[in-house]
Length: 305
Image 1: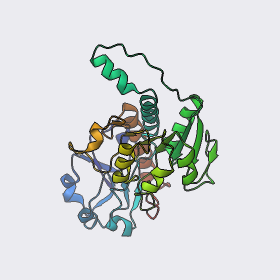
Image 2: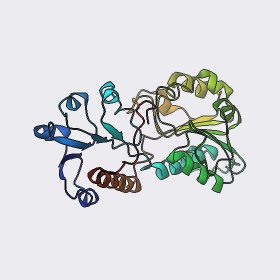
Image 3: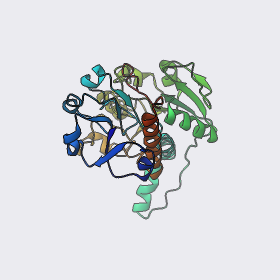
């Protein structure tokens, strides 16, 4: 059994690879000599490689979101695709809280005053008693709900499968109601055909003028032009953006200089904990694959995650 891992050698992966030949490569092209024999790839597989790998049975995406992996060729393929969903949930939830606090307390104002050596004492808000609406209740959404309850917040949520457990969420609602009642609208859902562009001008018009929009999953769920207009006209109070419609965010993008926006470079889950959990997810799935057991985090290709 030949397995290719795109990335540095990992003790956890090696420990789980008993009975298999595992090759660690910097690029999948470095394993071109065994494309015809490899049965699994941990890393992204381009369509032209997929066509050269008749024995390939399993691909594991290094990301929690798999929109970049779901090419037409992968969608049509019988190859099982799994993801690293859950690796960054804790870190992304923490980043959401960070952005909420920075916006809620106007931390940029304090930073400007510090740069000017100026004592700027003002009355600010607090999260307690406010409502956070979480669009997407996967790993990061549920973890955010738990953290928000620790801040004494009311939590509303939207999820595709409402029959699944939703701890720490006060109420599951439709998106329209979440937009209308939330002081913070936090997008944690994957970008799929059903979510791309769903936060449009009409959606921003339904939000409170005092509300903030936060995105920590994928850009493009909000229409960038509509978001920019809502921020510039005061339709919403501000935004915390870790995921962007175009990445890297171009230097000329107006989002950089808006006074009511905090921009981070899709960096919310880039933590040591995320890396450790990624290796644990990969190692456990590798063990399962070799043992012929069902894999974790199998992607529903039709749903997009």
